[in-house]
Length: 494
Image (cartoon, rainbow, N blue to C red; front, side, top):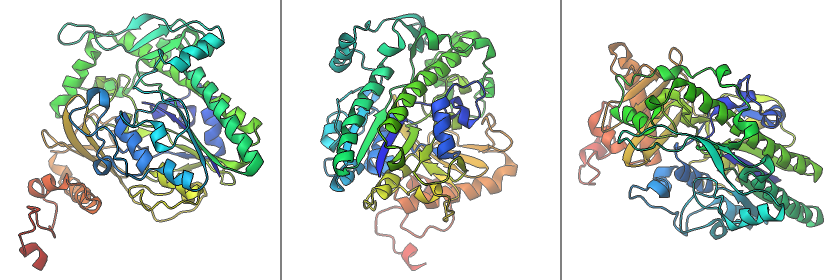
């Protein structure tokens, strides 16, 4: 079976019509959801680009593959996967697949897509590389105007300097945008692969990774002005006070200059973000239409997801960072497998990590080395296998080291912050995660249960974060040497 993997960057789940946004203009992604399976509890293993993408490549959680931060703001962590690590493109090539990738790489610095057996032009960095030679050739060949922007939106940093660019108006037509360029290159690669599939049934994997809707939201007039800001309903979490929460969140809010901009600017930013999503949806529509035109519809599994979410003003924040809110950890996840039920909605806790085992399963390739990944094929095919009732996520820092672990179950979310106050949210009564109830006396039973469950899962995975928890919290009976010295025999005799 062919594999088409469509991926965006920093994409909120509530920007899609398929996930309930009545103002969204995402007809192509909504159609994909209607023809396949929409996962309502799809999470990223970590809300930061490079570690999440490395997890997709390997099927391993970040603590295991050890690529823990983005290169641009690396805080001393490893920046590339080791040469001998298992990756799914290598496994697919062993099964005779073409493997190609168009778009954002951002899974390391020294090793490029070609080092993993992926065909295509290497496009490095975290934002649209509008000075890349291949993109400039694309514009020249089509007599399209170069990149240029106006109407910049930014706030003021605590030191008085200009804040990070958040959005701008792009002085190019849609055909000249980097998004249109990526879709065009993807279609060209798909045509080449389709010819080999038709001639000798050689299957293919094609990953198409858009750089957006990651900030800054830089789009042409039609998308910059697509949504009237006055119609935008602000997220309820703009009422965030940061009371009872880790102080780092207030600091991040200042870094992202939220309070230095009028609330009307926040509405405009959200409106432009939605316009950016529509621009990408249209390019995805072009790719899916080409897939159908090439006669590949019934032989190709299609995935759509992203590396993580985006705040866009929620909790008075932008971008992502050391705050494990749903805005950046819960993401869209759509999967269509030919012959599987259409219009299905699943509420199991699944992860971007699970895409790795799923693709290997569809390719009949062994997935044993994707140790933190589980195939979604049974769920997409309408089966009901036993499934874990909760999910773990992790964070290691961005701008500075900041370790966190999260456990999310049916109702509650626990976040352990070793340097600060822990967090506990009741998502049934407080879906916007405004009230941290970790220290509330009536939450003692829930707090203890979730702490013990998180501890058990981390021990089982081999995530050494559990060592901090062993000494700091009541996590139940400890059946290993808590000093990790190998010298304490008492625990082995209990």
